[in-house]
Image 1 (tube, protein in one colour):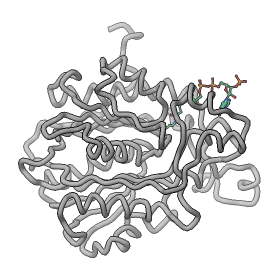
Image 2 (cartoon, protein in one colour; image 1 turned 120 degrees about the horizontal axis):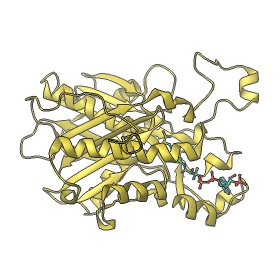
Image 3 (cartoon, protein in one colour; image 1 turned 180 degrees about the vertical axis):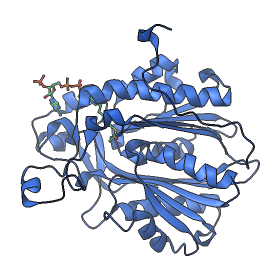
Image 4 (cartoon, protein in one colour; image 1 turned 45 degrees about the horizontal axis):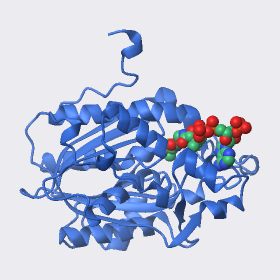
Length: 345
Ligand code: ACO
């Protein structure tokens, strides 16, 4: 293989063909806040235009949570819908995983706050941080607990209030993001919707592409860090774009390989909803037909860890997915991180 044709990213060496208890997605739900911020609204806030945002990203509007509505509130509402669809009660949940880069507080975890709001008293709860890849990381982790028979019921949530870490003076980033949450219940329920595989990967050499510079141990909050606007998300858009395409391809190809299926067998491809041009570039390289793609970023923008979870819920509730259909979820995020999952619905 010539260096030019070598894949840019490598998935970790994972043993995936061992025997374990099968895992099903028995419930899915999502929630987005009521307030809509359109591209025309943004025209009044920064030097931008609906035409620029639409043509460069595909985004038309996004949702913004109310001042008193926190990530744990969005997460709880999405979770309640997933719990309802699964036909269980909150006390059945053994583990809550919340994937987020916008927790209510640095600690305790948002998962603990969600546990309290759901009244799910008999479970473990923790947050995980893999940026936009967090929900797929959560699926993989939840899957392991069920396969190993450690737990029977795992709630995985992707939830973000990105509007609190977006710099509303920076037109390069503020047009891209929105708030929302999506959730699934994972259980062992033979003859239900099977999670066939979940893949996750990372490349920390690309950590500087997308980050929030201050607020951690490297740069604790000071009057100077606030004045320098370091508590907002910073991104090298062009480099992130290129790496996103490569990382999503790496993840998707690994997930298909593990399941020994071809992209043509996938009924619905649900990519991370960051930018329509990234989605199309990945789709083209993977050989995905437009009828296979599910896209809702025109209405929500990039909701990071919530993105594919919200899209999965909408694809199911809109009738795009039917029983027995194969679904491919594929994501990338800051870190750099990536992931993919195949579900037989
Ligand atoms: N309105 C008008 N003009 C703008 C805007 C805006 N909102 N934003 C940038 N511009 C300008 C730039 O300043 C630049 O002007 P210049 O040529 O005078 O310097 C010009 O438009 C072109 O900018 P580019 O960076 O070349 O635009 P590009 O086509 O690359 O699109 C974008 C930018 C949309 C950010 C794209 O690079 C992208 O989507 N990147 C990936 C971002 C992403 O997906 N991030 C999420 C990662 S996931 C996570 O973990 C959170």
